Length: 154
Image (tube, rainbow, N blue to C red):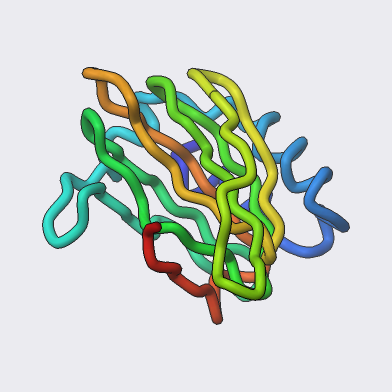
């Protein structure tokens, strides 16, 4: 079964009731670098490559490619929650809190190959690759991303 068939089979609301179940279902698929390699996009307009590889009414799947020392925008996920897995490399997940003055650094989490973490709609973060090797990450959001916000860097 190819990756898209796996996702189509696994990602519908009958299977998943909350983000913890989403995380468990995605981890059980044992997604490999070989499976995601055809979907990796090199950066063009952004510092990183981003490819939406699957979307239905319930979920959206994105492959993110972070070259050496690349970072995402500081952003939230609107009304979506997500499960993220590191397929290759090491990344820093830099978290922020919203304040009356804007956003403020909260903490940094470190993840490496085969690690995963959850984000909620109100999670404000930036992902950063602090290494010489690329990072490839696998993101599943439910519902599909909408109303997300990007924040200025401080």
